[in-house]
Each structure stands twice: as C-alpha cells, then as structure tokens.
Length: 275
Image (cartoon, rainbow, N blue to C red; front, side, top):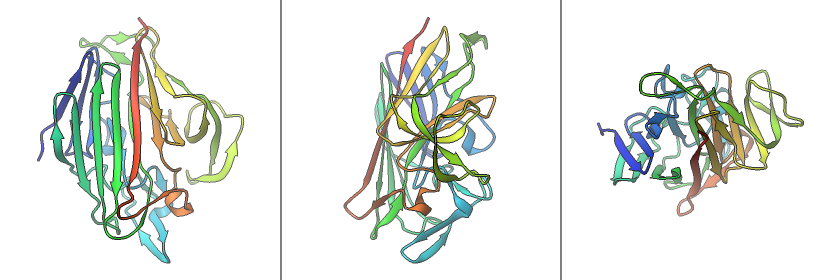
C-alpha cells in the first residue's frame, strides 16, 4: 500500500491518502487543521474526489443505452452515492514537494471501465485540485466533484478553540428541491430556505466559503455549475462542487466521456487570515 503524501508551500500543508479514495486527508493552514480528519466510515472526513458520479443515484439504478445497470447501495442505502472510488486505493503516479498526481482505474462494479486522475497542488494561497476521467473503449455517463468536510470549530495544537464556529457563506440564485427520498425533484426553489441544508445549489453569484471569525476564511472556487452544501452534522460542514446534480446519471444531466474525449474539472480552496 502507498504511504501518505505530504505537500507544502508557505503556510499551507496538505496530506494525501492514496489508500483511502485518493483523498486529501488533511489541509493545514499555519499548522491548524481546517478539514475534519476522522469520521465514521469513508464518507465523513477529509476531502475526497467523487468519481464517476457525485451525490446520490436513486436506488443505485443507472439506465444507459437501453441497459439498466445496478450499482452498490451499501454506503448510504437505499441509494448509491459518491461513485465507486471513495474507499478504493489510488496509485501515486508522481509526487514532489508541492504537487502530486494520483490515478485509479474504474473497475467493477462500474460497468464501463475507464480511469480517473487526481492532481493536487499546494501554494501559499491554498490548495488547487484537478480531476480527469478517461473512457476505456466506449462512451459513458460521468459526473465528478469533490467532497470537503470543513471543521465547525478550529483548534490549535493544545485543543483550544481558535476564533468562532464556522459560518457558511453562500450566494446562490436557487436550490434544487429535494424530495422525501433525498433526490432532487427538478424544481428550483427561490428564495433559498435557511439552514440546515443537505441540498444542491445553482446559479452561484460568487465563490462560496466558510468563515471562522477571528481565525481564517476560505473560499471554494470551481467552474462546476452544481454545488451541494451540507450543514446537518455537528462536526463539520461541506461545500461540494460537482459537474452534475445528484441523480444526474439517471436524468441525463451529466457529461458523456468517450475515448479520446475526457472530462476535466478543477477546484481551489484559498484562504485569508481574519486575525
């Protein structure tokens, strides 16, 4: 199994865990962890790539080209969620002081094959990541994204709280209405209801972020048009850029990746001090 990969630049340090979903296991700013670094199961910590789909897929059913494919629903029944690589080992293709490239094959239970590439770079202003998905020998539906868990409360090395608890800042024009099964209905809600959220947002007017008053502010920037924001758990909040909405593989709101025509996505987590 591969060891953790540590990247550093200025006051920023990132630790990648290739063996657990190719995730960013820790992101430290001035020595302070801004990500949740442990949780119950693979879904609730770090910042992991979601490949080859993001969010829930209703009942694990993927209809494609006249065939109904079944995908595992064991992580969060009754739906399949966050792709097939959340717990899978990734290979370290390259690693330097501030950059690394990880890769993983899209094997069974994904029926189409293909390969995912996760590139991560740290700089003094924060962390920058890219995802690429390549098809094998036939077209396939694909959605990618990232799932960062930001801590509610920042703490120093002695465990003392730094600043105030996390405040999510979100400038979205609409929210996809979530049905009783947790899947968007297709309706866009305006105005946006107050927290707590486990919802997908659209029409973003600016980069969403998290502010810890008296400590740091981070911004999550991406060209992805869909953003899932989760604020229902005590230990952390999530701001998840995605190329398609939850259940998008089933509704056709996804990219079609073909041989020689990969899908690319990018995300940055940048910071500034508030002290």
